[in-house]
Amino acid sequence: MADEQTTAEAGAAQAPEQQFVMQRIYTKDVSFESPATPGVFRQQWQPKINIDLNTKSDKIDEEGNFEVVLTITVTAKIEEETAFLVEVQQAGIFFIKGFEGETLRRLLGTAAPNILFPYARESIDTMVVKGGFPALMLAPVNFDALYQQALAQAQAQSQAAEQGEATH
Image 1: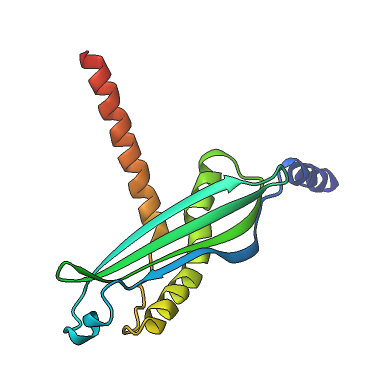
Image 2 (image 1 turned 90 degrees about the vertical axis):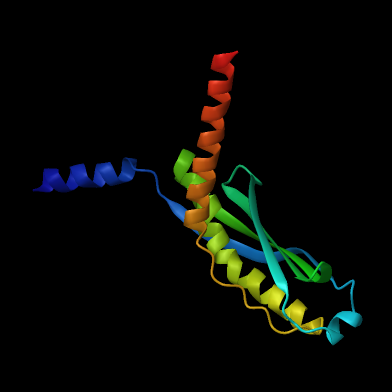
């Protein structure tokens, strides 16, 4: 019994400690443009909304801190005229220890953006309202699905490139 406990403790001691800790959340960049004002306010408000999401991450030191930046760009157009364009770069510093390879990439591409998204969404809504437009509450985003989609797309491009090289 004592031997079993010692073996279990030794196994636990050998397993690397895994940590994922949010250190800080901050706004890296914000931009709001409304080039068609004040004329756009006289038009019926039925805009075509386009939303572009992007994430990037960088290791910022050797202790395991990473900066993750979620960029959301929203463009609202009435016919072909831009009513407003808003962009937010919401960033965070995350301490990540004990994760490698695909697991680390998945944390940086899904878990961190999931934490940052509500902050970016609130900033966008606030800027749109202060710009004189109706509130814009972005729907939740499934970053896990987007990550899987990006992996599948990268794999398809890689396979297409390999097939292209094989035919030459």
